Length: 167
Image (cartoon, rainbow, N blue to C red; front, side):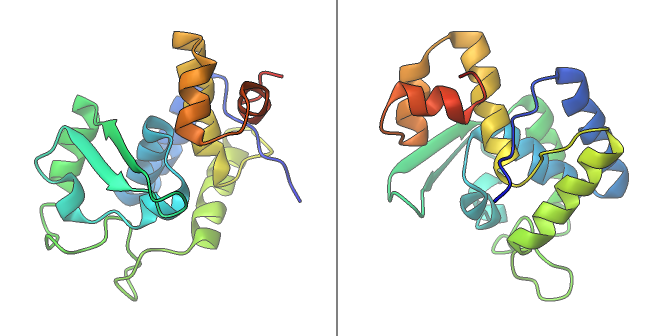
């Protein structure tokens, strides 16, 4: 099993965002929400227009833990979501397949992220990279491993530090 790493270099994050934005707004939004929220991919893929429309904070119940999670939307994300959602129904999934209308599959997200990462010169990137990247950068800003431990529902701070590539 491949162990994926957080993207530690802010310039590489921006490069991946640029690559994804050229491909599609959907792919850029998925990645940007992923690195801004710390959510599991399964929870991101279940987001609907109604979950984000006209909101500054998004709240949802995590599928794995049943716990409520909230994250603040940046001004950039609020604007991008407003534009992206213009032609969508309130009950549409944000990250839907054009073919089925259902959320895109995990393997599709993996391929999207992996291809963009390769173009940016990165390896060891997968769907968990977004969550790990979020944790890594929050830790750099706050140095609060206990907050991340709780957020990630880890058993010990050492698990969290290893997860975000700090140990």
